[in-house]
Amino acid sequence: MSEEHELCINLITLGNSTVGKTCYLVRNTENKFSPALSTIGYNVIVKKIELKNGKKVNIKFYDTSGQERYHSLAPNFIKRADGIILMYDITNRESFDTISKWRKDIMDYKEKDFPVILVGNKTDLEDQRQVQKEEGENLAKEFNFKFFEVSNKDGTNIEESSRELINTILSKESIEIKPKSVKLSKKKLKKRNCFFSKIKC
Image (cartoon, rainbow, N blue to C red; front, side, top):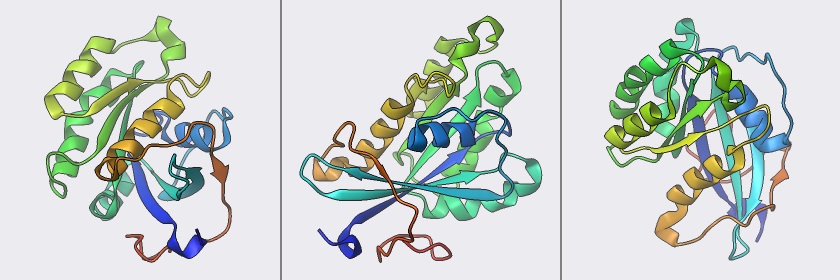
């Protein structure tokens, strides 16, 4: 399959500043832990996956800043996203309490069954936990989101959570991701049906 005909999926991260959105994407795409990363505005990370039927999919992760002064940018990404990773920090109660606000932002532009995963990050800091796993599970159930607790540091549930979101997006075609078939792509992609116009696939 030529690169011009490869499928392109756009995923965005949402959540408060410092919950670990950027580190999540770096762990997901490069399988390494890079602490203390901070995003100003937004960043884009791309990886290529292969499906069981041999088709290639270019995944574009749009990493958005959680800082309040960049909040006005969020609707532009939400409207064009194919799926959303909504993240909080299990050691930070405030980051969990604002999930409802982020969810409202999503529902302003998306239908109720739009693919979203709720991710509680930093399970490696269990001794500092402020948000119990059951609270995350209950909130995800209330909002009809898939739920994962993850650790950017040790890699727990990083690939599993993103794979679940991507498979949900692709479910209409009944195709799934092949494990361990990820390739990073640094070149510009040329898929026509990508929704983002400023950074073309």
